[in-house]
Length: 255
Image (cartoon, rainbow, N blue to C red):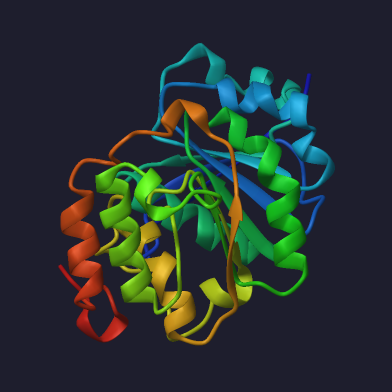
């Protein structure tokens, strides 16, 4: 019978309360986070794209009762660890727990893949390559190869807001795959571990803070047909406008 190690981390310093079930020790320099709520397709896709050849695979969960989240199943699928949020908030809370855990474990970089974006798993090696080359923010784009007018109007607006805020050109504000260096996440000018980040606001903030503070950023083309024409998460425009006004900067922390 296999032995799994379960640790409960209490809330402290902007890090939410969460539980970690560890199926195996750290084996790679990079980690891939899938914020899973209901689906486990992205975990299954790992086998097709052999993500675990390049990175440890970790699930950030809401505490789903899905039978697919059973320890034995996840361990067989090659998942390194399961992080379960035990605190208020949604995506931003899960990512704060995951980022903090990854920094404590000593990873060089972190890749996030949105749930239901299984095809993005094929892009993980490319993201890792860019992080290894010294980039601190690597953002995937479904529209990188298209002229602005060929994007849906709302996506065009989102991309313009993000680009102006970041002082760097981006073509996809709702990218389903992103990579962050540990150096960037741990920098005192960034401070991602704040309780103002509860939803997709954390990813929006991190998309602009890197270039604002002199970190190296780049965009890579990705294919993600399933989500291609979505408008983005609910309330995204409000988040982008707050972000543009500097509301999430460490000295103007929104509560």
